[in-house]
Length: 477
Ligand SMILES: [Zn+2]
Image (tube, rainbow, N blue to C red; front, side):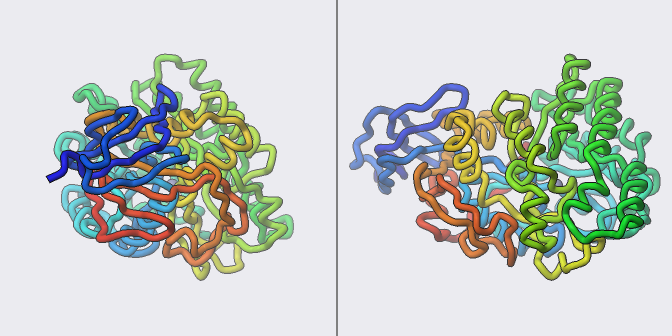
């Protein structure tokens, strides 16, 4: 019997918060067991030649939507497979009761086990869940969810207050299947999350989707009255950056009042970033972390509208080129904590050619390392170490995975993305191994792709294909 299971030989390790080192890495029992300048290949049962490659910690895709529009089991199988293509080995998926997902409400004590059993055995990556308490009874479940169910992060949607506007309906109660989903609900939710955070060593936090509902109502009506153009630019005008600014102000003010740790999700605009920076400066005692998505970094409505189609409809909307540059600047200067995909598999037939009924969201998990390396490292000078922090180490720390995921240290899970930094490929729908039948990133030339992705010491993706079976397990946080 060999001393090690897998030896990754000849590569350059990218170690978050430390730097790059030329070293071999060997695994045992699914964990990193040895790092040295040279490890004898005869000591390992499998040897992977990583000469000329960068060996990153597997990405932790911290914003995902398994099962939002398709059965959980199908999304788990097809969308975490897509994660492997981009070097992600853990996904943290949002789940809530109400319309979409399981299309019902009730206690998480009974619904969450249903979610877990639907995903079990189907996922190619390890996975965890953020849950959204939609009513007061679910808020009261937070101590049990943190203490027993392994859930240490929660979510609130600022824009479901009063109306739901994602599917051209203004009936929020039918959508959330709850009664009073408003700032009062948010306040009690923050109190409960803050109390749970005090009760444990892990960080227990609340993630916020920041768009302001009453302003959206006005601007949507204005866009429709002004000719109702069926474009992504019109969608951005209907939910303008001002709605993000106001929602960030509301959310962070309540976070300070309750001492709740918060994550401001998918900041999409220069204005949202400015508001987030101002809030952080004004409230230095509040633990607030900022997320941006691949699509808000890389896509703009002018280019997409020139191509036509509504495949990139998403909330918050795709913004202008100036916004993408503001987002990159905030990634480079350290304002942003992590980059995620906000992956939600949404078929072309669910988009259609009408703006308002088109379902929001699309996939991007397969591009996590590739886009950060291509657009961040090659084009903008981001170091590989910072890239690893942005997609792996920082989200792992924020969401209670530190010590297990997000780094290349002895004792950590041996989750690795072995990346050829100079491999250039054009993005096609087929390349991404997702169930989604279109891709708003299609046609982009991207430089820097995984040639192998390793989950807990097992090669699960190599040279464009997965190697089964799916071995992902639930990670309690
Ligand atoms: Zn999302």
